[in-house]
Amino acid sequence: MNIVVSGASGLVGSALTAELTAAGHGVTRLIRSAAVAGKAGIGWDPSRGPHEPQRLEGIDAVVHLAGAGIAAGRWTAARKEVIRASRVDGTRTLVAALASLRRPPRALLCASAVGFYGDRGDQVLGEESLPGTGFLASVCRAWEEAASPAEAAGIRVVNLRFGVVLSRDGGALPKMLLPFRLGVGGKIGSGAQYMSWIAISDAVAAIRHLLDRSEVRGAVNLVAPRPVTNLEFTRALGRALVRPTVVPLPAPVARLAFGEMADEMLLASTRAEPVRLQASGFPFRYPDIDAALGELLHPGRH
Image 1 (tube, rainbow, N blue to C red):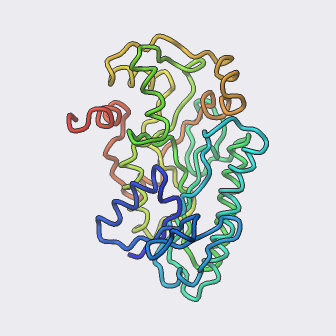
Image 2 (image 1 turned 120 degrees about the horizontal axis):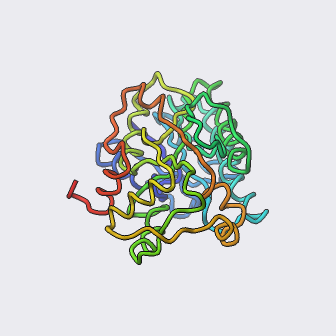
């Protein structure tokens, strides 16, 4: 297939483009700088859309992963607007460009997140569960709504509700390793909050799977089938590193250090399960946290 990918330099996007290219697919990147786009990419401005929309004619699918980093800094009012606009406005302008094509793509796989569900305690959350409240939930709702007009243009839309993507090359995991290796890692808050996660290799494989499943549309939870509490994750990471995990991060200290972000990203509980992904026949390589961390931290041993 000929596939356009936005956010191709990000954690998931870089791994996805490498695998798609190795599998023989044609990959064109949406690149913020038109000057460096060249033949390998199409320049675009999330607030205005692609610079050369005609180059999107005849593509088979778009995987839209672009968005400003959620954890790149404290959530000031300005930072929250950057996070929202990069996702909602960028999706809206891209969808408008795709809908205007004489030959629009067959599929648009657009990133979203399990933040859609908000803080829900131990409630099991499938794709039909109602949205939650809070900043991330409101962003995810608007993000998915911005993608929905593509359906009217005959484009199959899949909203990829990512959990925490675990990779040794970036994201949350490398930031956790130093304190845990020093023996000062531990649970956050009560440790009872659920974390929906997925190994990077399964995340990429799931996207490739969904590109081929023309019957799947709408929200899909990109999470492993066995979510874990923060305490369970902490103990699993300690086992993988063979280090103690006895130094907790109390909730008040987390809030002092990270502000509003702490409540929505570190202390919130989201127990999402991949109902639609499993129903479509996707085979997880790493369904449980011990196997995932073992392979990520000690590749080849598992």
